[in-house]
Image 1: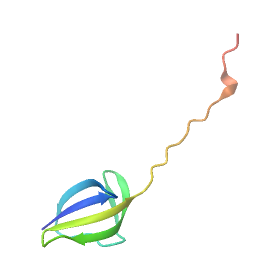
Image 2 (image 1 turned 90 degrees about the vertical axis):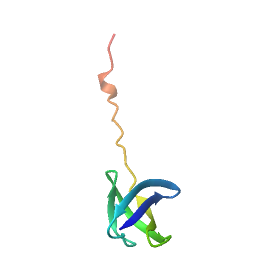
Image 3 (image 1 turned 180 degrees about the vertical axis):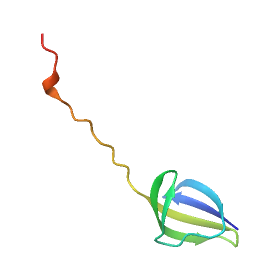
Image 4 (image 1 turned 90 degrees about the horizontal axis):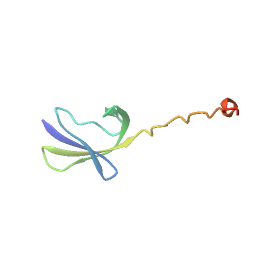
Length: 72
């Protein structure tokens, strides 16, 4: 059993107790967001730091319809 700490840059996303450690290049889903493992660092026999790159969330802009203005 390993304690796996997931990081994005310097932000800690998740701590998890796992049987296996993800490898570099694996695709994960953390908190509902897709992530790719970029680096794996073993601190000791139980603790592992995994650095991930989260996929950017694209927010859609609402289209403004100027033809529906109020007429006076």
